[in-house]
Image 1 (tube, rainbow, N blue to C red):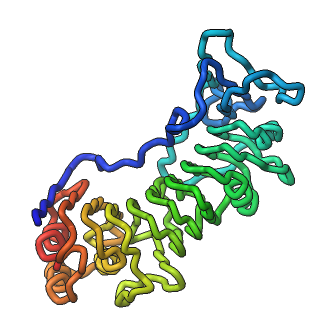
Image 2: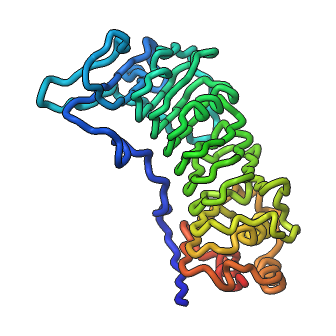
Image 3: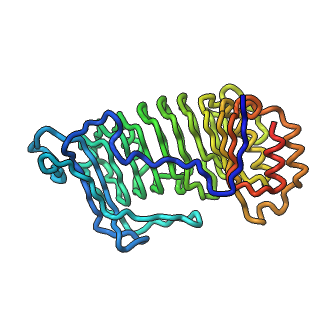
Length: 354
């Protein structure tokens, strides 16, 4: 077995892919499609020239029916239509804060009962409470800056029985619960989230966590994800990892009930200058014994955080004295350290890891 360690001073090359922009393989195709572009009457406070959009793409029907929604548009015969949308709003959080802007409009509830819809993006709207939701063909869903309750979000996912791709970014829900028999890939922005729970997702293979700028901590609960292959970024400083009923602590040894053996690609963020984060790094790694590709992003904290930290020798002794970590000892084939600066604690961790 060949192992390699690579450091990168640049920004991480391992980035979550965007949700599919086109229909998944096997989806109905044809010379025409039905598309929706709906613009909210309110502009966002971030960009006065742009307006929030709701974009939907549905499979073509053989002939228009009397019950077709009023926003259905058909292409001219022999020419495929292209979906257009208003210019999307940009959002770049820099300080980890986010304040609720002016009240958003409610998008048309008929969208949530379109039985041919396969791809739906909702951006900067208020979810219509009490609306019946039935999306039997929806495969890709993106919810961005939406005012939606935790229960409504869970019901929306449950009403999409063939959903494969999900993206959640800067919404109002503080507790996100993923429960889906069909979901395969999820991208979850954690800027507003206090707890993310993965429950009963037998096909979920990729879970990407981003926008993790909060300093208050986020609990990541993995209850049932037997097919999870790719996970990251887990942050040793701000994420509290819970597997099953057990919360992973720096000094706690793992057991068979606190491991996720299916994960093969793992990404972690750690400040090597903070000793408790170094200890948590070791505990996180023990929970994923079969990782063969490991990405570690070296993060910085302010001087006030590291002022009273132990010396580099203390860190080196920790790595020499702890019991072997299974994935580092016998499974990891590739390790990439992003934003490597070459300070003593980074060198101690990369050279002394058991």
